[in-house]
Length: 399
Figure (cartoon, rainbow, N blue to C red):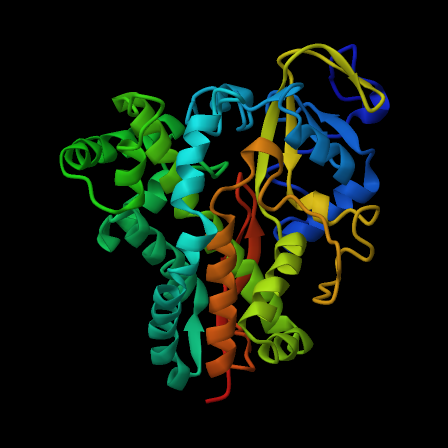
């Protein structure tokens, strides 16, 4: 059966794929994307989610993601009708307009600042791991992954840990294909929550990331109310979702691979930190989009202005033309390329914090629990969305 598609889209480029519900996705999120990549051309069209292109080849994906002159960030969430509601900065504005906002994030999450947080992250990780060691099991998702990165991030922005559940609820409304509340309701909830906080910190700023952003000099002015609400909302969404889900994929992998556990356990911190590059390559999890700026010929296709191109960042690292034997985790791999943190002017400003949190988690866990396995009552099924996730990682070990 032929699928409906625009006249300018060649029939051999059409696939019947819902990017949020790939065949085989529940069993293995990354292998499902790899199977699609292997079965299709590097650039394809799907009629699902209002119709859009999908960049499946690593080189094509990297080009779309980094070339803001041809592919705009104005809409980055699919379907487009939902993405047009997003309007958060700096993720939905392009250079050069986005640069002053991006500088605020870069300054707030600079490598030197993150390094000063290492001891705090390590202490927080140890405090979560120590109590479960004698128990012989834990719900890693609920007892660790949903706590550590959020605890660290909320300390960075000086917000109470008690607010974490509702912040995650609102974030899920803006990152899941089956949100618990409507997209617009999640966005508005963030704005209503942040409005009095921003007002208070304008009057009495602290040393937290939000205070530094809203009081920073923007070329003779400060962020106005709408800019502050938008930027701070984007920061909170990124801070309470992505690393949480990435840790789930990492620990699921380690529970199934004794050799990888042994290799990491034998490394010092710098070695583990370097090894996270391979883990981020193998387990990328963010699926976003770009908007075509003008009609163009692109990798054998005609793209029309206003069309959406899906950028499933996880497939870049899984392309064997980019990284040989890509499904194998190889900590000795050199020169690996991936897009787990994006590329180009919108590369994730929080990547150094994410790497530190993951490396410290691995090191502190393996010091105390070097051998562990997936518990029979775990739910390692995966779900799609703007951010992929493992449903529930429950681990057990010999006491």
